[in-house]
Structures are given as C-alpha cells and as structure tokens.
Image (cartoon, rainbow, N blue to C red; front, top):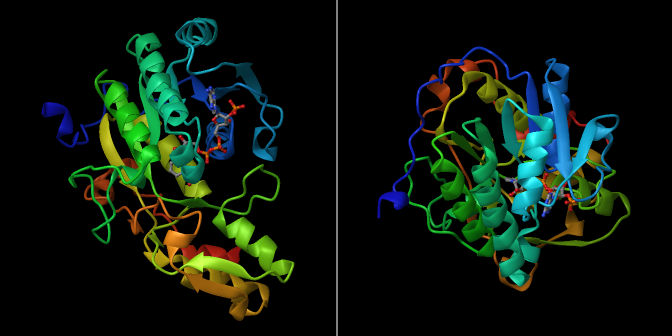
Length: 312
Ligand SMILES: NC(=O)c1ccc[n+]([C@@H]2O[C@H](COP(=O)([O-])OP(=O)(O)OC[C@H]3O[C@@H](n4cnc5c(N)ncnc54)[C@H](OP(=O)(O)O)[C@@H]3O)[C@@H](O)[C@H]2O)c1
C-alpha cells in the first residue's frame, strides 16, 4: 500500500538556483504555451511537442517537435533528439467530460504517456501538471496530505500518471485547480472566456449551482512552474487560487464586469449538465507553499480581482 501514501515535498535538489538550459515541454496547448512563453522569457531554450503543431498565440515562433506520447519509441527518440535538461509534462486530454466518455483513451495517454516519459528520463527532472480531480471532492478543499480517491476517469488517469513519474524519484507533481485566463483563440476556451463570449452574445447559460473551484490564473501556473524548475524539488505540491467560489457566483461576477444581465445565468444542478462527472469541490490549497522561498514572490491572484482586471 506504500504507493497510496501522499508523496511529501522534498527539499531543493542539488542544482537548486540554476534554471535548466533547455526544457522539453510535452504538450503544446493552453498551459504548455503559457509555461513555454514564461520559460523562454527567462532565457530558457524551450521546445514544445505534441501530435499536431500548436495553434495558440503564446506558442507562435517557438520550436516544436512532433510526438505521440503514447508511443514509447517516439518519446525515446524525442528525448534523444532534444537532450533536454528538464521536462514539463503538460499534455492532454484535459476535457474532463470527454475523458469520462473515453476512459481507456484518457488512461492510455495520461498513464501510458507518463510511463513512456519515465522510461526515457535518464535521471532528468520532470514536472507533471496534475489536477484536483484526483480527490473525491467531499471536503471543501484538499491539501497535499489529503487521501486521493479520484472523482472520475480523468482523475484516475492523472493519478496513475503521477505514480509513474513519482516512482522515478525525479518528479515534482504540481496539482493545479481549474485554470482561467482570457483565451479567445483556442479550440476549447476556458470557463472565463466561454462564459464571457456567451454573455456578450446575450445567450442564457445553465451553470451548475453545486460545483466549487479554487480557480488559478494561467500566468500563476506558468510563474510557479518556472520558479519550481529552478528549485529542483520533488514530491507533490498544490496550486489553488486563494478564493473558493461557486460557478454561479463566478459567472454572475463576469456578467457584472461585462455590463451583461446576470439573469442570463441560470443555476442548474450539475447532475443534468456536462459537469455531472466533476467532484462537488474541485478545490486545492497548499499546506507547504507559503514556506517555500522560491514561491515568495508568486502569490496567486484572487479570481474576482483578476476577472475584474481583465479587459474583454
Ligand atoms: N486547463 C486546466 O484547467 C488544467 C488544470 C489542471 C491540470 N491540467 C492539466 O494540464 C494538462 C494540459 O491542459 P491544457 O488545458 O493545456 O490542455 P490542452 O489545451 O487541451 O492541451 C493539451 C495538449 O496535449 C497534447 N496531446 C494530447 N494528446 C497527446 C498525445 N497523445 N501525445 C502528445 N501530445 C498530446 C495536445 O496536442 P495534440 O492533440 O496535437 O497532440 C495539446 O497540445 C492536462 O494534462 C491537464 O490534465 C489542466
């Protein structure tokens, strides 16, 4: 049963303080693009990778290599070609509803992909971006010491991926709550963007009234990832935003910011919606982050303040 124990955060590694010179990012979607842009801005040579070329503006002009993470030979060949100093695993599928309908494919990509990355690491550090869906969601929020028990197929696949990488002793698992930001160009815009777009068109929206998150601004995910890569820690760490908020309250706040009618938001039990498989509380907090010197300058912003500051 030893693999069921939470994996505590270890002290900084022997290379602490030095940023890796070259980072391979597996994935080239929403989070990958923002993380890669942050790393590039810090002078890190960054290579994105996925099955098809990136489409988001953050990734424009970045080096990209083709890989299907479910193929062990392809992952090994990619690692050999790029020779990264560190790896960020931030590949999909990230659509929780899709994963529930396609559990085998979700498991094959998250768990199988992690197993292939682990096999090719050769001692390199890896940071896996994981999720709050590894928890059942009965408690209002979950710290690193909470017992995992995945809420759905997505959570099972991500927890299996975590275990594959933690077994290498080279991994930091960064569990991140629901990520938001203004993202008008992606194929599957996040909650903030899709609610804002619908409200601007005057559409009514059925939003679950029994689903809570601790939303995290995408820039905070990128900032934490970069800071943690410099410290070389291993183990498990949580990144949740400082405010626990229900989706209805968040959507109404967005409506007020836009000058739209908050009555367009129709509260609905999540059971009858695409949110049915999500835990009641998809919320994270950290029991240790406030003590980590590398994160001192990176306090996550409050979702209401960030939403207020975004210009639509
Ligand atoms: N967004 C969130 O709120 C959030 C919160 C917590 C954790 N996460 C985690 O962060 C990761 C990325 O999320 P995201 O929002 O950035 O998702 P995303 O925008 O959908 O990006 C997913 C990326 O993964 C790539 N991918 C999918 N299957 C692949 C495969 N077999 N081989 C190689 N690449 C593959 C996709 O490109 P191709 O399809 O072209 O291969 C795409 O570039 C996910 O693992 C998710 O669990 C996300």
